Image (cartoon, rainbow, N blue to C red; front, side, top):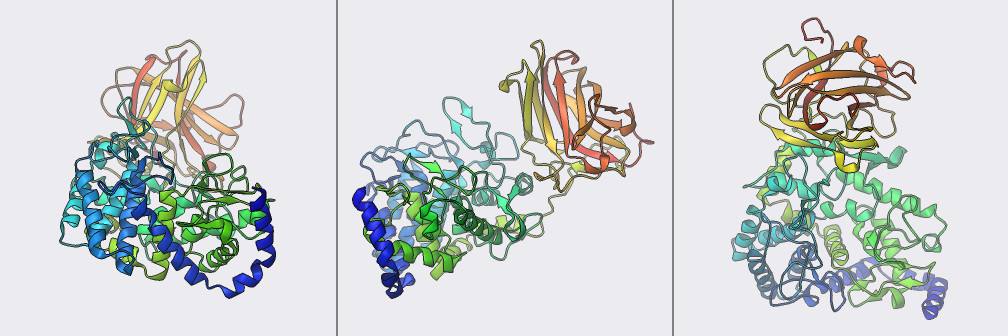
Length: 594
């Protein structure tokens, strides 16, 4: 370690001379080629499984396999490996995956490198299956009308995306043979754009295209001014790169969320700004790139949030950002190259390093070197984008969710009463976050309440709320946001006269409280006798009671709607409530105003 620190100082002092003589394009080309050989060498050639990392006991990561399939095609294109050898390796891999244990076409995240069996109790993972199948489909497009393309299509077509939604509008994050679905869903902005696009484009078990709309309205933003962007919770840079490695979002503008290429660029620049404001020497020396990687204290999801860094940076993040910020990426590469004796090895630049703690990673990680290979190639030739964007399934999905998609389309409704109201939550509108937040109080436990969006024959999708308030003193519920996180975009309902929604329950005589809130204010109303058939409910604002501890609600600045279940007043202490088409009415004259 001491030697490493001395070398760091020495190279930082003399590095300026060396950097002036080096060509960043040549360095990046060398790094791409060296990184690519990870996927040729760190593999069981008999089945094509690729190590998660360069340790002797590492399992295979199916995401690394996906990056590997794409990287090997890049190698064939450049002549780094004979094209026929690449074809045979990919064919071996896909033939093996055809017979691997799977659940509805989805694979376990980690596999034993030699037996292909589930490793380390890992989950059946939709995102890692996505990264595998993206590589397979790319290889099929690169080797058209071959057995590779046939197998890639077969593996894709057997993925049951509908099953993985667990009857909601979102893909579940995991499935376990011991316990089933995780009940945590892919909501909020993330690396999941590629996954949802492949799910919607499926020729066999597709997700409805409107589910893209249900997903994007769960996103939230971070940053300000020119750097305001749709953000992941930890701001880890890989989340802004993975989907972009395959999908060329440059000319795709989506309603409500805009251009995702520009969004990734803003997130990367936000990372740079954040790093420059931190006290660590690593950042002061011109490095940035906060992303999930090994660190001095183990693997962490480093990111541009407070508490999200200890001074560790990931070269793959700086290199993966090359298509978005070429000048800053090349400058970082030159600085790393000045320290090449410590920061460059068999498969290119190290996975991560920390100057402040005199630390560098001695492992390479497959998915990290993979994003370096793909994004470097995209920057110089656009090869990955060119082949992947030709895939018919991808074209189909983009056509379905592109600028023509209308995420405010309302589902069909029963013809039992007037439609003289505005729907703000048909589960396809731009309002709310649809994360379906739940809360508990009193003697309630976290397991006493949960909420999901599910499919429904009448409305398309509805809100399903399971609750239990059998214990004395228990109360819980679920809520819908009507404002963004910063509360600078709230819902103006001042022109309306009543709250409107459809409801049904799992039994007769179910009742619950409804609350509407503005900042620091709120009103409430009890609805009684929800039955087992869909009923339209109208709650005039005039019948809603002001909280005893607040001022009257400001209907021009609504921020939240909440459903509340309480032990001391609910007639049915446990059950399920279904809610659809939440909206506001201009008038109550032609509606039930109970």
